[in-house]
Length: 175
Image (cartoon, rainbow, N blue to C red; front, side):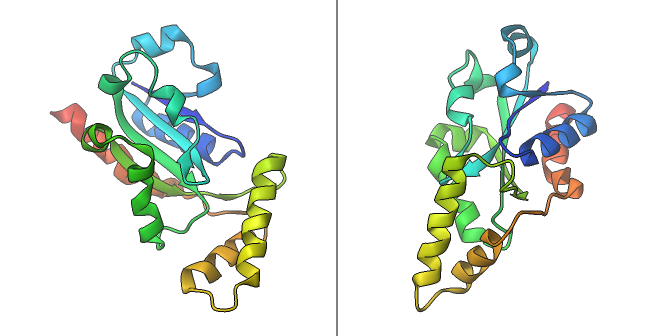
């Protein structure tokens, strides 16, 4: 088993390392994943940050040989609070095929924002979204929360949040 992750600002890396430690397996950045590591893994957990509704790097990992058989769980890391369940529930629909939705367990892990490590384009996109929300006269509670989230860098990572994913994977091993 291996945990593969894509991380631009460090939140997905942090969660991948926690998951790897809990499951006693390697956590490897997708850019550094070797063919040998992929071929020797019987099960793969993939994780990536959210950007514009997409799980970063997932489209590339699913193109690898045997991905449909090896991928058992995917975690997405984002700044959206877990309480915004309507937004989170859309993530698998927007990222997985119907077959993947049936065969891959999905987990959302709250991370945060790190403007200092963020690239120009993502930072610009968030600022544009923030300005657009600020101009809106009547905002929903969800939009107010998004404005608050976009204000500054923050870290809501929580090692305890990996527990459901880890327990899911351990339950597969018991079968």
